[in-house]
Image 1 (cartoon, rainbow, N blue to C red):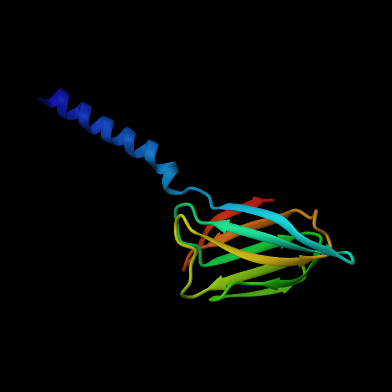
Image 2: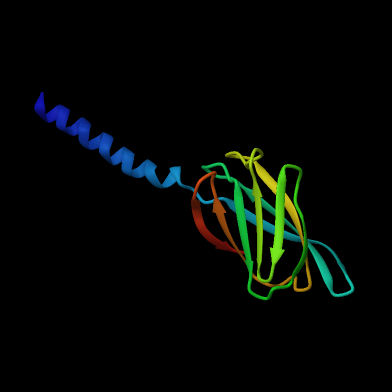
Length: 129
């Protein structure tokens, strides 16, 4: 009986270890160029929440080429220097859903580095697209 109980505890522990990484899956980020005109481009950026609601997104653009942003209803955004910060209080990106915003930029090829926040803290430290 003790062996069976020990084996069950071991199996449960291994299952918990295997499920751990799936619980903290990274959001998925994609971008595409919508329009280009006179040296500027509009990038459509989509962020999909994988495992946790997203309340904030920081985009670092090392080339400081973002000149304007358009955020969806319920989100606010500000661009300053090499950073774009987007946030919401009551319209988070829920697990399995996405948010789309637009970045007007003078360098459509610039790598963009994303970090994500939940309602209280940093949840994912970065992806570059």
